[in-house]
Image (cartoon, rainbow, N blue to C red; front, top):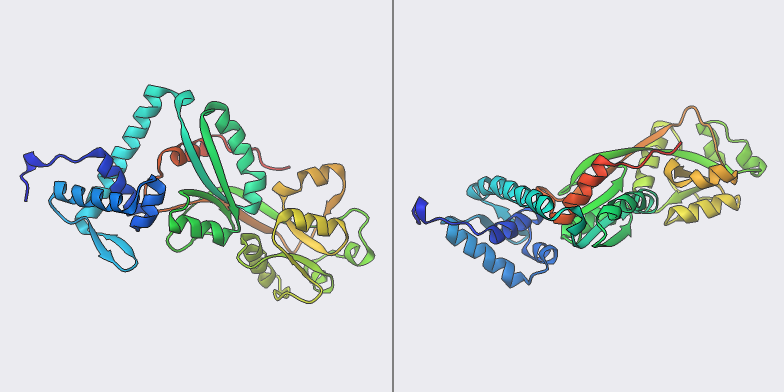
Length: 307
């Protein structure tokens, strides 16, 4: 065992350790760090040699921290945050470069992330952005795999293996076209929805999960009926509603243009109010580099809520 005076921890290996600890897998950490798996494994072994103790327990599902590894993790997070703060201070925001890899569920990707990128890229012009779009389950899967570090999802308060931080509130509202067919125009209360076609999102969608929970509370049938349509994105729901194919439930964020031009109308249903939350999703521990900078920007400059 090395003496106290002989221990000298390498900051680059400490960063690799942090990413492995957060992702729980060498393969996921390698993707996030843009390194080969053998290179990540070698750095962890070198760090363990420097520390003089095992930092991980290897098992079939990945890497689990030892007690000493958990203690070191707190220091690794502090070092990461301090170095990131120093880099921003020394270089200035205009000099920040690299690739920001984000994920978002479909509503957030279409109506919230672009507003955040518009202001973020205004002061980080050298940053390249990749945005992966999927339903909520897909985005959470990408985070667990280490494919992305940060995502914006909807409708959940907890998810296994993922940290969720509430960000913005949203309301799902029932909509129909202006000048709707008589059966759709007659909808006034929650029970009326049982007699008209509904346009629903696919399984795995955060919107669908929130809607079904609200339906159960309001004693509305949750099961998809032959008259219902199931579609995979918000814009298709809007198109189907505009064609008079049924009642859709859409985020207020997503229908501002249609409400302004009068093509859609919100159906007031006093006994069915559906509130949900958009949340930031990430692995445990500190966010890496640009993902951390983007998260801080989003927290400090959230977009204006819809009217």
